Length: 180
Image (cartoon, rainbow, N blue to C red):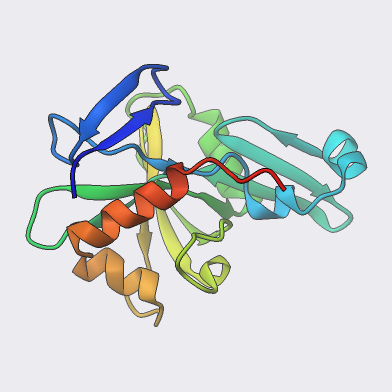
């Protein structure tokens, strides 16, 4: 396949022919909000949830559900390239508060237990995947799936995927949604 063209949501520029290399990285496949937020009706979103590009809280009767946006890299087999997803992860209130308290600290390093809160296309049941959330200062946290959890996403994280598969995933997520 040839390189991938995309309009970068991060920098606002058009990138021609990205190939996944360090010099020409592929776009990260991001998700705007965690799935539980997307499932809320408009009233609940307005009065019982707060969300921005990195943090999300949903007020529930039993307490708040807390979410962080993170990075989940999937290596490309036999290469140094990676396919990056930008999913959401649910963490405890204590972990969420620690993350928010240290949000702008470039030296903050902490690990939290979490669970994916984003359905990733091409995989079934990703909302059940347990992960370790590794903060990296002012960068989005890095996710490391539990290696003992039997799921294709976990296997792909540790074993990698083919370049052609990565390019197909990127292209399918970059396609504009059809107007129905």
